Length: 248
Ligand code: NAP
Image 1 (cartoon, helix red, strand yellow):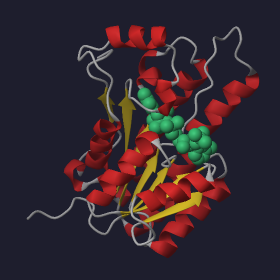
Image 2 (tube, helix red, strand yellow):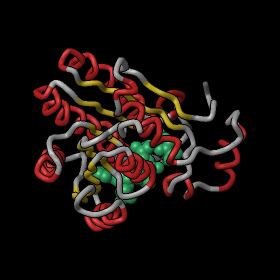
Image 3 (tube, helix red, strand yellow):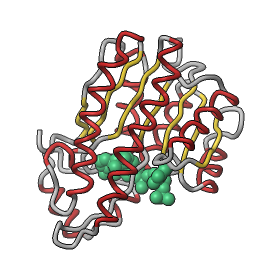
Image 4 (tube, helix red, strand yellow):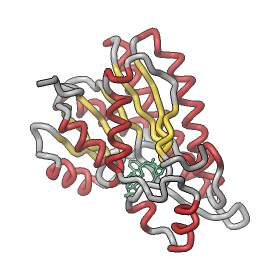
């Protein structure tokens, strides 16, 4: 039998109480990792950890990724429960869609803060621990919206494009310390974030997808596993599109 891909690794996944982050947590545990579910909602983080199998393999910790001290605390909790972080997934996210004509400054700032500053916090703080241990993998969730720009998402597209630049710059800074930093650009994935979309917008997106279907969270989780594990040991600073061929 082959070894699980993340045997005895400690993974921290932000925004993992639901959606893509939760699916990543499930798959990482199936592959031998122990996982900290870091989410802004403490109760949701705790019940996600319970669903994942409880305290021997999963711990829920409240963490607002926009706050550097919270990110330090979650990394500290991971070390205390399972050992120093080996894999960091910066996945937490929100949308505040509106056209530029109606978007408020607050909506712009909120999205930039959670996605861009949150990913910066997670990347720099995990990298600081990993570089001392000369190993580690960081996976950042960008979006196809950051590649092509989407109407109503000047905030989100800017943040998700920013995550690509951040990923590449960070990858160059820490590559010689044995730490890899890569990003995923999902297309339309079926989660709470996208199921709130009006039917007309959903149908429009569907017509743009060569594979004629939305992706499932497990199809992002498997790519996160690839980037988190030694399967991608010679890859850093890359951006993998998981889109069913949309906007290739
Ligand atoms: P989701 O179901 O809404 O999950 C995101 C999680 O992040 C939620 O539990 C959310 O909590 C949490 N969160 C929000 N703000 C936070 C903060 N400041 N600190 C910590 N946690 C916070 O979203 P998803 O669809 O799984 O998306 C996950 C990631 O993939 C996001 O970065 C998203 O932009 C990206 N993505 C998704 C799609 C898609 O089609 N679904 C496509 C491209 C990229 P609350 O629910 O309480 O806000």
